Image (cartoon, rainbow, N blue to C red; front, side, top):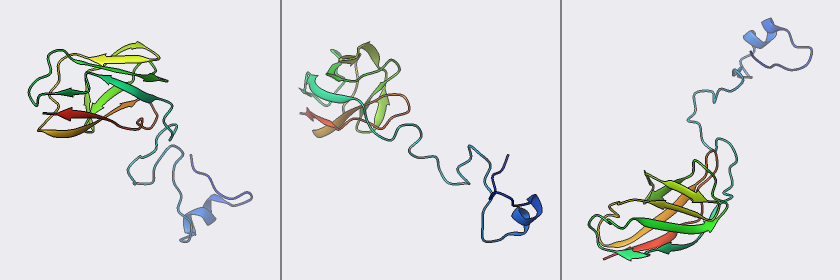
Length: 124
């Protein structure tokens, strides 16, 4: 299905070079960004623990906050990790590798929404 201007014929849409006809639901060849709600409804209030070694964190990570929804994911330095939804105020993960020493950004992303603001995990 294509959309044109009111009263415009299919032939004029095809001949027109100044307008681009894009099927509904298509991104017109551009990567799909900002799919769904472009704002974050989740927010991180604390991490437990908020520091750890650069090796595997066997104890896992508990993320406390607000607005978490079933199906949300925890992201460590932008990479998704296995996430267990506990409640609208808590999500957790099992063991994970935070990366080399320094500060790593932890975010939570609800399905179809932008990621929360980052909370820092210090890697020793």
